[in-house]
Image 1 (cartoon, rainbow, N blue to C red):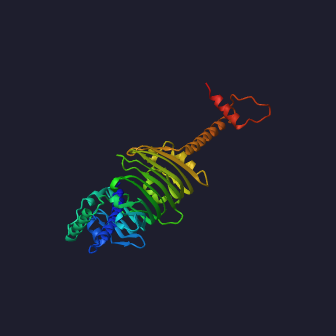
Image 2: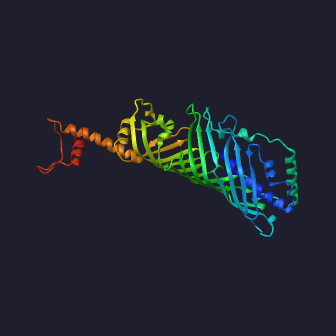
Image 3: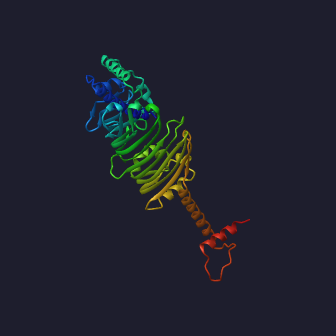
Length: 406
């Protein structure tokens, strides 16, 4: 995932800032500011407005951190973070050159823009084009590199992790995720998750060069509408060749008609109103998907479609599904599974829906057969009962199936 590169670069900025502070303070060379050092070391597709170091408060602030989007996107930036804040402490309170411990990093009001382009690709799929852009070499950058080389050669510390110990945990405060789909409609179709509060934890390799695992847990509000909550717990293994990750989403009170452009071709119905809550589980094991989902639908207003092209996606008739969905004035439980390779997954009804449909089918068969048995002039085998005692429904059903034997 390209987003992992961005996280690594953010870690790198914190490391450079902390290292620069140590070197500058140790060598007593203050004619090159830490901001200029960061500016010259950053790749061309990244921007940082300002770095602030508070030696007394032990704070490190990064202002206006941005990553540029590929050409042709609607927004100039893929990621904008107005403020990144981290806290540090000296390993040796008497000597800063002995190194720092950096932790409690927080991202305030970050905005992530994802775009689906007209060719169906995502902007992050084109980030390699951005990464290949080379930064123009400037005199100031050469001087900064010379200064960095001087500091490195004159220091007994030769590895970043010997100088800086960083706790790779990031807290996101009041974040926003924006997805604009230019493929599914002429006018970009926008979905947002706002007021995102999340924690990201990284397991990293030596020298901070690789991410071995990523855990994420958080919550947000769909399209900024109070009460429409989305919560998730996610784990991702980037070391596997094919997608390997676990995702559990809890949704509450979502007005799911917003997603009509995505579900319409699979749906047997036209939904005119409705709310959804429940749990969605999407796990991927080396490229294969295993998904078990249960959704509770309420306040439904729907009608059957005249076009039945959706039938190929379902293992039961639309008539049965319509009867099930429209049979209750309260919540309707709809559970389903998705299994198989990502490029050709199979959809299955869940156990609760199958049981409900089985009961409906059984009731329908029973009604028809009982009506036939009660028709005038017809008789058939039956179980023995006490004279004058009316048969139970179970006895009637047993009689029906006995009559079908042979």
